[in-house]
Length: 233
Image (cartoon, rainbow, N blue to C red; front, side, top):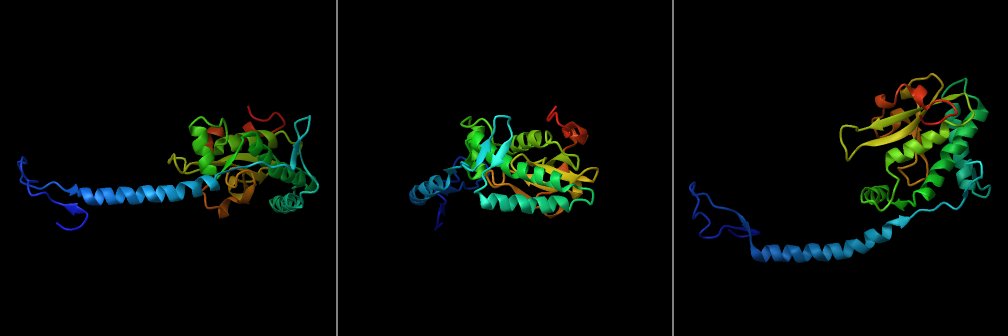
């Protein structure tokens, strides 16, 4: 047989059913091995180069534990104001001061967490480092837990915070994130606050418009667990 597969002349010997075994030809196997090795040598430096440490220099952690963005960081300030407007749109009873407070924290905290996690990008590579014991934290549920713990300590009365999960039945697709809703409103009306997805640069969008099929984590319900100034319980 021509091509990458061949059937040795004695392939049927020693088999009761008389059927032939298929083997990779030695020549083809060696050629493919050399090609794959060459490909890995080309790709590896590019992959390593693309895996960079992440550090945000324009976020400060004050003595009282609160976070503050540098005023000179206009891009982050613009994102805070955009998120504030989206939070205000969650309900007519949302207070503007509460929306600004949550928006500032939701943008600043993931950047601070990235610094604390000694984050490496892309996110899946950092996951690998955590799973190998090279980093202590930085999986999606770490982001969710730490961001949730901070947001629930804020002095506000307009919002509820939920622990959202997606693809829970599939380990390699599982994801979790904070979901914020106007107080008393359904989970499905909320906004996803995801610090993991863009390596500390907050991603947000309506629950219904995200690519992940978000549902509330029933094991962490009722949501009163995440309410109030005492943070996580």
